[in-house]
Image (cartoon, rainbow over all chains, first blue to last red; front, side, top):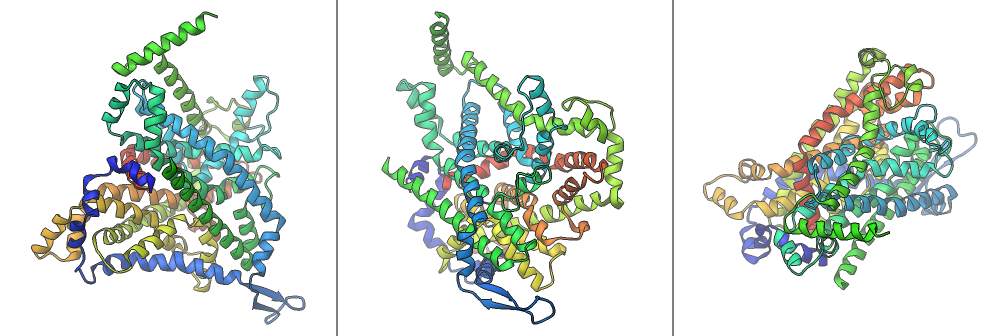
Length: 323
Length: 300
């Protein structure tokens, strides 16, 4: 809630008018109109969001039992299995390792990317820099490239024998840099994600900076605050809402990590079929033909994502309230 | 060693000058140089893509990667569009259908829902909004697998519908629409329409949608990117290559170029061709991104 308070000077006047009783009384008495407007979206939302979630939970509670050789009709039976798929998920070594991997990835990549995006946004917002429009366009450009194509593109830049980056580093005396080694692959993926989303996050933060009223800076400068102090004491707190938003989107994205490792699997053996939790779920559903187990993985992942992003939001809000 | 404090003093003076009247001082030059280095990082892969799209499969490996060699752009292009019976055309058209038509439909549905949540009082309004907002936090990939199981129950896997229908749902669009409608549509205007005898549907179409149009562009762009980026859903749903979006098509080629070496050139030039329209649309519509992102970020 503290974040809301911080943003009040930026909120449009109409929004505050709505919060008063006068605005509220004027609404309503429209009968079926809200149903008519909400209906089409509501039906599709129920069919393609709520129903699959419910179905995943249902499927995750079932197990297929194979009798005999599993050939012919009637040799497999589906039974209610309680939470046994879930206990299997949590004791599955490859799942635990995959979760550990994406958490490590997130703990390093998200702060690096957001710090990078914040620095770029602050510099683009300051008056001293030239060619701001050009830079903004260039930084945002990778976001227009879909993740799969970005991953394909970078896979060429990682591939020894094809990559001009590897060749250039070799000429510069760094030896043969292996971007696809057992330890380096994860950070090569992190680089792809950083390349794709830094500009997008920068734009969110930049938009927040642009919404700060100029007289706030004037006041700070009259008090003798330096450019650095203005940035850290005035600008950063004012864009905390934007930073929280980028943080939550990044957490959701990281836990879902799939396309980039899936694409890079074509050129390296260091990405197994359970490299990330999503990759494991995909393998279980379509290669191991075990949809019930895959459903349990999907549910655990969705709940985990929800808890992490929601927890992050609450943590930030509480800290904001304390300060 | 005296140079260091001298430089520091100079830059401090430059900074104070910049405060008085924004001018490009020494710190400005340093900052611009830093931004330039960052620009190289963001541009280099794109530059490589442009350069490599002009090379044949053999020179791709043998020539200097960041500079032009034998110019084979035209033959790459004809090869790309004729390979496998011109399937690349299919992929482009499919992408336009999934992402373009899907995002347009999703925008309209989300605008109506967001408007209803912002401008009508009804029981359960807050609950409905909370459930939809929860939908923003549900990872798309978690939905893809149960969606596949459900779609196979009704025989819709491996059809256009399997990818198109789920793309029509944009909870984040509803959130943006609600925030925007709440802040920008005056109740007096709706009331005036009602006094004039206009129906609720007509007021929405003629008054609300027009006022919300900047937000609609943002919502469209967001959903377009979300669909275009959603690789998992078509990957699990589709097996017929002629239904693929361009991302999935290029991904399959990328996995096959070990067997068919000419494919590597097609992957390169195919990637370039597929992103050019989008990148142009993106960069030219950037101000809508900014306003939409600001609305989303500010209200959180």
